Amino acid sequence: MGHFNIANFDMLKAISRVTRKYNVPVVIGTSEGEGNYLGIHRSVDMIKSYNEEFGKEGGYRLFLNADHAHSVEKVREAAEAGYDAVIFDAANLGLEENIKKTKEAVEAAKRINNQVVVEGELGYIGKSSKILDKFPEDVSIEPENLPTAEDARKFVEETGVDMLAPAVGNIHGMLKNAKNPDLNIERIKEIREAVSVPLVLHGGSGLSDNDFRKAIKAGISLIHISTEIRAAWRESLEKVLENKPDEIAPYKIVPPVIKRIEEVIEGKIKLFYNL
Image (cartoon, rainbow, N blue to C red; front, top):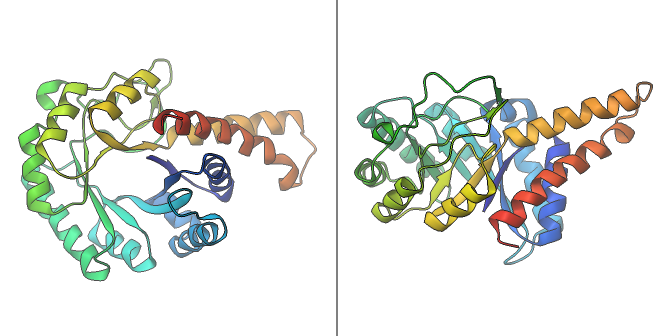
């Protein structure tokens, strides 16, 4: 499945149009910043409204995920608000401390709603979805620095997470003047064999189609895209404003922006769902 972040209604509109066209389910993500901007309760309301109007059994449906909650309190807020899933991000910590914090987050979420899906992260891949001038200095993609299959097994068993996002050579954000590094496909295979929960790939923006295909075949079940959506929004908006410097009506400015985001989403949907 595809996981697409939104920061405004235009992004949600674009994603929904494409996924309705292909009649597939997707996950909508809001980071802490995006959730604060949109309002977590408003986000829940928007997703509920779309599902009530367009949802189909076995086809189109939007699931809402609280992307990268960095505190147990934020996990509780998302679960209480009605999010379908939440990611607890303690990936910058050592293995034992990450396990301890993530287990606490899982227990807190399940006490509120035992149906909420809780994802944990293992291995640090950077901080945010943005265009990068250079490779992050605090991120390592060398095989010896990535989580091992044994690390993953221990993490899943001791935390009780429903999904796992391991570092497998991926990074958050997109490099400005180069393609993102290739994924460590063998490590994905090893982790897939070691754990029983679905694997999630963060930092999907900037990866090649071939890497996506190999990652899915190796065992990835959910792929995150955010930076590419933000970049498409910014670049297309600048172009529209340049071509229409005197236009002030948002509903006349925004349609080409939505169209450009749709193009990004459609490419990913065809690839991820093998359509």
